[in-house]
Image (cartoon, rainbow, N blue to C red; front, top):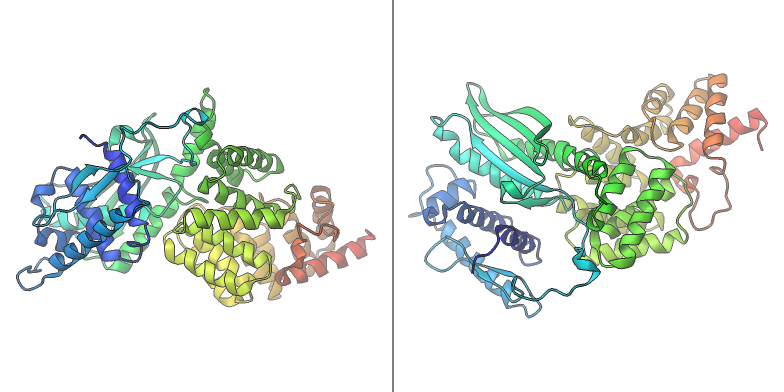
Length: 508
C-alpha cells in the first residue's frame, strides 16, 4: 500500500508525544532520524555509525564494535513501538516499524487506514483547529565542505524536534504540500559555522524573514539550544513568529471564506497584533462558534482559555461566568492533549486567578519543561512567578527573555513597569510605561501613576482623563465574577496611587 508521507509524519508526531515516548529523548531522536532518513530514500544506508554520529551526538571516532549504544537503543525502540501499537485503543492509520536486523523503517497500513469510510459530519471539516504547514530544509552551501554534513543532519533533526513542540504549526515532508519553507543553508567560515536562514511563503514565493546566525565550529548543546530558541521566537512562537502572523494576514486577505478549521487561530492572532475590544469580540465569537460544533477541539479550547485570561487582564467584562468557563476550557484542553505546553500554561494562570499558587507554580514548571523553546511560554512563566510572590526570579526571567533578539509585543514591558513602580524606581517605571501603547488601558494607567510619583501632576491628570474615558469602570468593585485587576497584591500600590490621584482631581 502506498502511504502518504504526511500521514507518516502525523503518526510520527503522535508517537513522539505519546506517554510511552515523551520522556525518552534519545529514543525519540533515534526514531525521528530513522523515519526522515527512510522517507528521504536513505534508509538502506542507515548503520550504527551514522545513527550514533548524526543523530545521537557521538563524535566521529565512535566505534560500534566497542560501544553497543545503537543496538541497545534500537532494541528499546522496537519494544516501545510494539507496546504502542498493542494498545487496543490505538486506531492509527499508519504503523511505523523497525524490523530486527536493520535500521530502515517500514510503514504499514494501520487499523484505521485511508480505505476506511469517513463519516460525513460537518461537511468533512477537520475537527481540530489547524495552523500553517511548514517544510524545513537544511543544506550545505559548499559541496566540498563535507565535514559539515554531520552538523547539517544534527541541525535538521534538532530543529525538527524543536518545532514539533509548537502546536500551532504542522510540519510536512513535501515541499509542494506546504504553506511555508524554512531553509537553513550552512557554510563553514574561518571562525566557525555561518547559517543563512530564509523563510518564504510557498503560495506567493514571498520572502517573509531572513537572518544570518553564527555557531562555533564545534557547537555545544547550549549553543544549539540558544539557536533553536532564536529561530523559534522569530518564526513560530505565538507572540512573535513571522510564520504565524503572516499566515493569519494572508488568510484574511483571501477573497474566499475563511476555513472553519483556521478561523479561531487566525482571529486570535489578529487580536494579539491589534489589541482592541472589537478584535477581541471577533476572536471570541469565532472561537465560541467553533467550540459549539467541535467541543473537543483542544486548540480552540486553549484559545478560548487564553481569551478568558485577556478578558480579565483587560477588564472587558465580556465573558459571563468567567471563572467557570476559564477553568473548564483549561482543564478540558489538558485532558485532550496532556503534552500541550500552552494548555498547562493557561491552566497555571487560571489556578492563580482562583488563589491556588502551589498548583500554579507546578503547572508553570510543566509547561516550561514540555516546550523550553517557546518564548510565549517563558514570558508567562516569568509573569506567573512574579504574581505568586517570587518577584526577583520572575523579573529576572523576563529581563533575560527580552535580551533575545525577536519582535517583542509592547505589552512585554508591563511586568518590568510593575516591578520598577513597586520598587520605587519611578523614572524607570515611566520609561517602561511609555513603551506600552497597544494594550488596553495599561499604557494610560502606567503613565498616570508614574507621572504622579515623579511630581508631574498635570501630565498625570491628562493620562487619568484618557484612562477613565477608555475604562470608566476600572476601579469599580461591583463585578463579582470577573474580579477587579486590583485584587492582585502586586497591583495594589498602583490602585492606591490611582485613588489618590482621583481624590486630588475631585473625581468620586
